[in-house]
Image 1 (cartoon, rainbow, N blue to C red):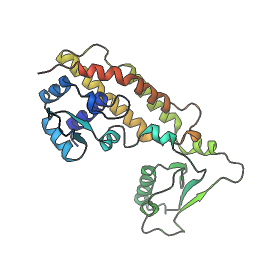
Image 2 (image 1 turned 90 degrees about the horizontal axis):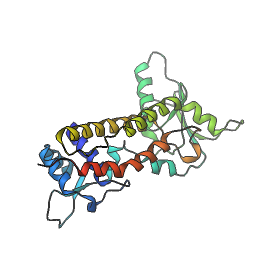
Image 3 (image 1 turned 180 degrees about the vertical axis):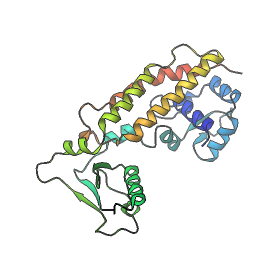
Image 4 (image 1 turned 90 degrees about the vertical axis):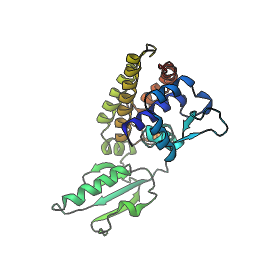
Length: 260
């Protein structure tokens, strides 16, 4: 997707998604005019064709639209943190064990990328864990693998190991929290002056892009574990609550963007 399309989705999220839910009644006339003036006509058409935005039938102003659920998830990294944290956990760990020959580094890297994309954390170099059932276990396994080189098992610790110890070892929480600290700093820096001039509008738009990039960086690294597994000192929930608190103020700022 083009940078302008991503920017448009991001600004729509702030404008219409005040409480993480898209809504038709929050559409503001000035924002639509601003979108047209800034060259968003073609991106809007492309996004609509891809099912990322939709228009309300029967509305006289055809420019009034809203994000679809798939678009909302795209803007926030593909997963809804609140839903992820509140999901249930059955107490079972899914463990990937593999023994790829040292000379086959390409295959090893590919396997690790797959495991990370499925939310696994690295307990040891060849031992990866996830709290979630795999919807398609076969997609994770290498087609050329057999049980001597790769195996997925479901297990629970049985020698006094705690779930907290597994969580702390499998993910780099210091790095994850560092990303959330950066995001919180950016969130605190959002422009508070009403963007009624082109210069102020440009500043707000630049901040919105920076905010989204920082959020995606943090959420991409964060496994978004179930609540009962979150480690002590974890900043993800605090960052998300701060974002929700700031949303109404930012939405009001966007309504003041200069029009044609």
